[in-house]
Image (tube, rainbow, N blue to C red):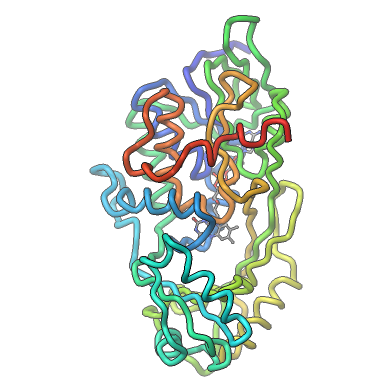
Amino acid sequence: MTRSHTDILIIGAGIAGASAAAELARTHRVMLLEGETAPGYHSTGRSAAVFSESYGNWAVRALTRASRDFFHHPPPGFSPHPLLKHRSWLHVASASQAAALEQFLATEDIAGRARRVGPEEALALSPLLRPETAAAGGAYEQDAADIDVDALHQGYLRLLRQRRGTVLTGAQVTAITPGARGARRWLVASTAADFETDIVINAAGAWADQVASLAGVAPVRIQPCRRTAALIELSDCGISDAWPVTIDIEEAYYFKPDAGLLLVSPADETPVEPCDVQPEDLDVAIAVDRLEKATRASVKRVRRTWAGLRSFAADRSPVIGFDPVAPGFFWLAGQGGYGIQTAPAASALAAALVRNEAKPPELAELDPAAVSPARFAGS
Ligand SMILES: Cc1cc2nc3c(=O)[nH]c(=O)nc-3n(C[C@H](O)[C@H](O)[C@H](O)COP(=O)(O)OP(=O)(O)OC[C@H]3O[C@@H](n4cnc5c(N)ncnc54)[C@H](O)[C@@H]3O)c2cc1C
């Protein structure tokens, strides 16, 4: 098979790979390879599609804040639809969770974004709740949103093509070998074609460690975890689209309105091997049980269920940067449960690091060392 040359080859066309590919295609020849026949088949197509600046750890929140402007003002022609639709967030706490709520509200960068609400206001905002579920009140983030994930993903793929980049589906990467000594190239074999590239970007989601192993690069120990979601029809109860995402302060469940139904998750986080993950009946039953215990809702029918993988590094921050040992091997992985809402800033940071430029100004508060793979060196 003949081998074509590219500047940058990105493995994985989920939101991470697609966004980085579009950013980098402004300055480089970019080839984006996806093993499945459709980009977005795995985690990207299975999210709850939420944007919240009070969700995730500090690095995640910094990346999310830095992404806000892109969501509101994407490049001209990026999407025919707005990328965000207003949807507030309500973290609720029972009496026994009062300390967790206090700790949450005391977090410096959350305090300015989520305000304390008393039990009565919590019930007014999310009327399905039982009074005891919100006995300690909650934290209300007014400016959260639903994300049009497909518009975001397709927008990046379109931008990539406009910038003369290429996306190749059905191209499962099977081997990655360093080029001749001193050439600083990688030879990449896939089920569709073979390539020679200066830089490999590992945006393979749950498979990030496996892709690193193909290249002989030490894994950073990304752990894929299954999360389940269900769309539920309620008995004798209307569902208002004005309701917030309502989430247990300790993330034991969350629910939000979704086109006349209720999207519910038991917020499970079960470690699994990378795979085309499917929902387990038990997790769906737990979702229904937690919903019925926390609210006055009575479930009439479960209309649809799905599961997806949220993949975490040990400290739950993303992994963005060149491998400290393997020149030209770049990590863009470990996005956990936040890869959609952080994609604009994460891809802008990745592009700046690849180009050896200063980080984007909107990321002033994030030290790239906090997300660099170098933090795992020697561990
Ligand atoms: C139930 C659920 C709810 C979520 N809710 C939210 C939310 O509300 N907001 C939010 O921001 N995030 C949310 N997330 C997380 C978000 O979906 C992920 O962080 C994000 O999709 C990860 O994107 P990715 O591109 O890294 O991974 P993926 O979308 O999984 O893409 C990786 C791609 O790499 C490809 N690949 C792997 N190995 C190879 C290979 N060898 N060769 C070629 N291709 C390969 C795979 O086929 C795959 O398509 C949720 C996730 C789940 C499961």
